[in-house]
Structures are given as structure tokens and as C-alpha cells.
Image 1 (cartoon, rainbow, N blue to C red):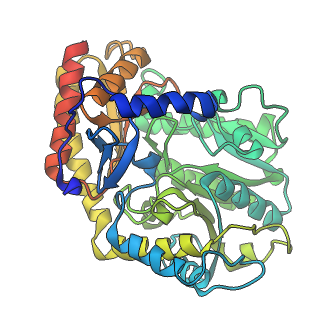
Image 2 (image 1 turned 180 degrees about the vertical axis):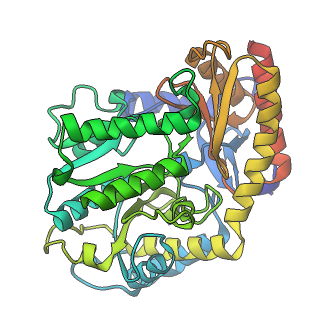
Length: 450
């Protein structure tokens, strides 16, 4: 079965002839700006593996950028969607209630680690929509105009979320942007000020936030602070719990809501159902969670969840939309969560993370080009530098490694403010043999290029 296979390239070159023909058609029909094209065209996928139209078999460490935590084509999710499709595809939640929407909201309300006993959830189509709607909810509740985001943040490609996103290559030439968005420094501890301990660095980064209040927006005008529990595009950098606890206190002292962007970090990826479960254990849970990606198992679905008093402050007409909470997506999501809980995929994420990080630790000792590795569960970043002492980012090497690994059947993607981090987002149903095969490919390519 494909789901148990190992990477195998059977064509002389990648892409093979059939894939090359489709990629040529893509270049004629689709804007180049849609994104990077990897040298493959998928035919079918199972688990953590996919086969392209030339018969090459690839191990996927990208997983739709965090969409496929339960893997490709999970048979139970396929069946759930087929059964729903036999009844109806769509019933707009603003017009006609369908039970799947209600059941999914009830389920998320029961597990989401947001502050408050009584919670409410609504659905949209994507992570960017989830983030933007979370901001709308916060503004409606606080009656305040401004928000604070962080360096390294990625929140989406709508006009609002492009403004919230730090890396402006995602927003080049798209201004003017919405007003009232201010930025503080995120605690990137690997690149903290020289000579600082972690504790001193956290104080340094908190001072950056205080300076936003001083120079940009007084705290009484801030509706929310929006933060990723583990930055994705920023370089797979976990938010240190002591910093989050301090952030929570700042919010409480100033009437500011704390929004967690769990679009990429949610749904067992970090070793918990949601990464903010770590926050809850530390007593600093957020007020609002925005999430998407793996929630729908591959069908577009985003969600926003908060305590009832926050949600009920939103005026009619401000939230909702045509396709939000689509019936097929809700059916998929209910089955996805069921599988995650039943199969203990959060525990599996921790097992995967330990296996990968054990290998990364050895490489860090051996290879001068590996500066750092970090993450939570199976959301792990591997940062490449010219040398450990100088820490100069090495994006050129990362680009070469990704391209050459694809030729051997391993699909990876970079991230980071300097594009010098390889991200690990492999589906959580990956086998140990497949993990080891991918690590072997990556190690061999690194050795070849240093």
C-alpha cells in the first residue's frame, strides 16, 4: 500500500515527462505569484506519502503546510464526506441550520483552551479569515481600535492580515494597509542580544511591547494582542511560556484580549490537541483562538472560539459568510477530531518529535552549518547558518538542500525571516521507517553540500 511505502524515484529526472508536461501547462495557465512549484504533480496520496503521475513516490514533510495532520485520504474521513455529500453539499449557516455546524461548534467549545466556562464557536473558510474575524470579535467586545502583532508573524494574505504579517514579501506593493496595527519584537531566543540569558532576553522582548504602548498606541486603545504559540513562517519558534505568562498579565492589567493564532499549530501538531493547551496548563490561556488548516483534514475550514460574553458582544451582520461551516467541511472536521482523539495523535506527535530531534541533535554537533533546532511535538524547525559562531543565515544552502532532496523523493519547505529554516510538518500518521528514510535523505544531501 502507498501509505506504507518508502520514497522511490523511478524516472531519470524529476519531474518525469508526464509531470513536466503538466507543469508546463501550469506556467501558461496559472500566475507565477501563486507560489513555488515543486517538481512533481500528485496522482494520489495515502498517509504521509504521495505518488506522482509518473509513478514516483514521495515522502511529504510539508503536509499542505500543516493541513494534513491525519494524512492523505484517511478512509474514515473520505467515508464521512461521501455520506454527507449524499445528503447535501451546502446549507448556508446564516440562512439554514445544519446539525453538523452545531455539533462541530459544540465539540470545539468542549476542548478549546480559551478562558471562560461557556464558549461559542463560528466557522469561516481559512486561516486568514479566522485571524481577521478574531480581530473583529476583539474590537466588537473591547470597543477599541488597535491591535498589536509581532516580528516574524504570519497571519494571512487578506488586506488586514497582510498588514498583520511581518514579512512584507507577502504584501509587496499592496498598501496602503489598514491603520491601527502595531508591532513588537517576538522572543527569538536563538538570536537574542549577545550575552543575554534567556530570562534577560524575555525581559528585553517585553520591553519592546512596553515601547509600543509608549510610542505607538496607549494600552487603553489596544483591543487585542495577537500571537502564534509557535511561529510558523517566522521560523518555527515557540513562544516561551514565561513570556506568554507575562503577556497574559499585561493583557489583564490593561483590558486587552489575548488572541492565539493556532492556524498552523493546532490539531495535535505540537503534542497537544491545541498548542494553547500548554498555555492553559501554565495558567495563561488566551481569550480567543483562531484556527484552520488541519481542522478540516484537507477541506477548507477555519474557526474562531471565545467565551460567550466576548462572542455575544458582536453585532449582527459582522461575522458569518456564504461558505463558512460548509456541510462537507463540518462532516470532515468532526471525523478528524474523533480520529485524533481515538488514535492519540497528540502523543504520536511527541514520539515523532523525539525521533526527529534525536537525529537533529547529532547533526548539530557534527555540522557547523546547523545553528539550531527547536519546536513543539512534530512542529520542528532546523536553522542553517554559515557557521555557529557568527550565525549568519544560510538560505542558499537551504534552497539547494530542498531542491536536491526532492530529486530523491523528500518534499520539504523552508521558512524563517531569513528563509534559512527547514520546517518539519509531516503528517502524524507517518511510520518510523518513513521518518528514518526522510532523515537519511536529508542527511546525505547536507553532507554532499557542505
